[in-house]
Length: 244
Image (tube, rainbow, N blue to C red; front, side, top):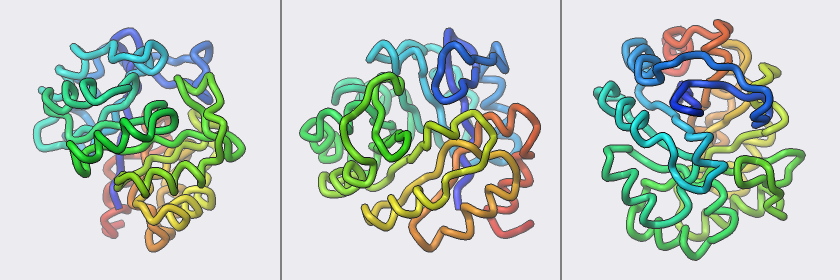
């Protein structure tokens, strides 16, 4: 199973929000690239980065910071989301050296464009499905996408998406545990590999996700729990590899 340490970017800094609420922001680091370096040195193989300013603006706003993160990444793969709304934006991000891009609002709102992206960049586009009480949210989580998350997952599978990141918004940044059931349900309904996001509070949560790997959950994103000292990244990586 893959452990994805997370860096959320806002105004060039590494921050965490609660349920995507910009009024509930905590700044954890002024230099996100240094955080990426720490994650790399701990043994992380894949980094999850979200440009929160980009998610609101509809276009990437932290490109220079993302460049600095990539410069420190070494062999660590990097996926980036937030404000990537068309084929050109995907191409530009991949040209920077990003391993894959996360499509959130675009995937929910424009399946035709998403299909084109999957055609041109097979395996390099990930659908970010963010939902609260089963309903998809878009545009920095401020707008309802008007559909059920399982319905969107099936649609994504049909147009060529191979990986989905599922975030339960009600748990994001609250250290209340992962919604493993909903994540497994999405993996089974779509037939696509799903990464769990939102709510990791302890190493036990990592183990709970890992126990459902056979249902199609391929990884878990850990954000606030790392910054708050609730989860040790090296331990989580060892657990995911079956060495702890």
